[in-house]
Image (cartoon, rainbow, N blue to C red; front, side, top):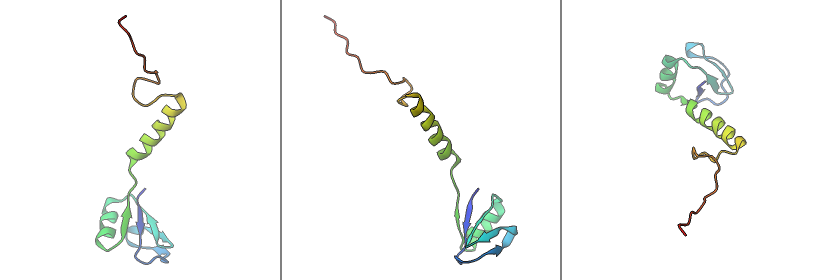
Length: 82
């Protein structure tokens, strides 16, 4: 869920759109509220869902021993025509 940072770092309470802030940080996924906060000088930090899923799939690949190149962990082999 996106985090909203108040310009008043110590603010604790309920603000616009019913967003609850604790020590200047609130959370909401309401797009109208996020837009309002941006327009009024609040910083909005949205996490990328794709970044989370790629990190967890990378960990699964590493656990399996997959090099992540789609071909598995196969060593290079040279063939000679002799």
